[in-house]
Image (cartoon, rainbow, N blue to C red; front, top):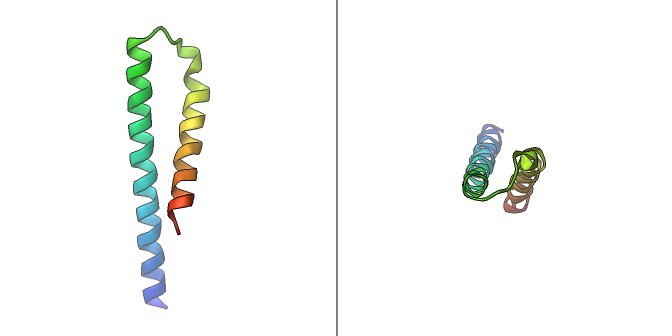
Length: 64
């Protein structure tokens, strides 16, 4: 029972780490695009929602 619990805990931590790294990379790319192009700040909310969804989905597909 304890091995299963620790294994699940490791999987959860790995998933969180993967999601955070993907989110940080995509947000950095968006920040660079926002800085050096004429894209308006009104695109921020949809892009952040899209980045969050991509990070969650990437973790979901990586769990197997």
